[in-house]
Image (cartoon, rainbow, N blue to C red):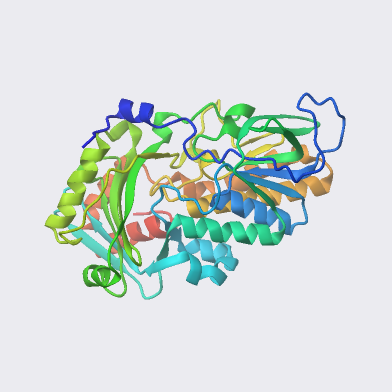
Amino acid sequence: MRLYGKDALLQAIPLDINEGAHIIGTDVNKKTDYAGEENTMPEYDVIVVGAGPAGSTAAKLLAEKKLSVLWAEKKTFPRDKICAGWLNVRALEDFPYLGDGLADIVETPFYGITFYNCGMSKHTEYSRDEPAGYLTMRAKLDSWLKDCAVKAGAKLVEGCTVTDVTHDREGVRVRCGDGETRTARIVVGADGVSSRVARRTGLNPGWQNHQLVICVNEDIPCPPETIRQYFGDRPRIMMSIGYSMIAGYAWVFPKRSHLCIGIGGRVVSTKNIALIFSNFFEDLKRLEIIPPDLTWTETPPAMDPAGAAAMLTAEQTIAEGRVLLVGDAGGFSSGSTGEGIYPGMMSARCAAEAIAAAIKSGDEMQAAGMYKAEVEKSLLGYIRGVSGTAVLMITNMMYASPKLAEKVAKSYLFGEPLKL
């Protein structure tokens, strides 16, 4: 079995991991020379680069505001992404249209959480009557969200790769792999943790190690009746906080016909993650949390910028000029859990509101400032999370205190402030 140390992992992960680099279709009539030789009006109000949950949400909401949206994705649907598939219950509260697709996108609801300590020797539980969240498979979720955006009027072009993005006071120019260029008033970068939009426009030269978590997880097929046998009819998700002393946690998420098993931690604290994952897998069998005959294959690791939007360096920003970054491209995932679907969608909503207001005012250059102000107001508190030292102190106490365990659970599940 191949083991991954920190340096080897960073070298093994290609720069374009999760890049949704995108755009331009041959069905668009008007073309603009890359050097700007033709002085024409922008072809679109907005170009959205990336078709994950954040990109889909941005494209849908912008199209619903009657803005012209060119939306592009490097891959073709259906496509998958390394992701545990945790859909925060708050997503259905803030995006009610998700309720129309529950039967299509949700594998199973879950009704609480079981916490284990770092050595798997203690545990505590939190449960509630209504769902505490939902588990999904990203291929299903992303395809459904894509359909919503297309139905709203966004023009999706699949299988296109962005090679360059430039912007100035006149507009945005986006060049793709076929050599053609399209123009817009504003570009939204939703192209993942290694966002090419962010790098090409100078908004973010790259995430630093302290801003990143490294994750390995696998959706392992398992018969539904076996999952019910081990997790019941009202399953809880399971987390081992600080497992093997990583600055993160290991997990088991019981879905309809898969068990999602994974581990994630800050890059600076997580070495030999494949070995840690293997040890966790064996501990799960030893404690009879999963079936003894379950097997896994070596899964490549992925990087996520957990909480990064709340700890940007002087060289990083989520918006400037005519460029706005959402989802992982902007560092929008929970600093406590790494959960990114809900905060990614929320960042897209903030961006869509800012863009629409700026275009309506006649000054698109206002969009970046309006977006940053709204993110600061409504989202950064959720993104920041709890520091590693505080997590270890609090979680070591909660196994003897059901009230404290409930507070920790609500912080992890719903982003509620953790107050002792």
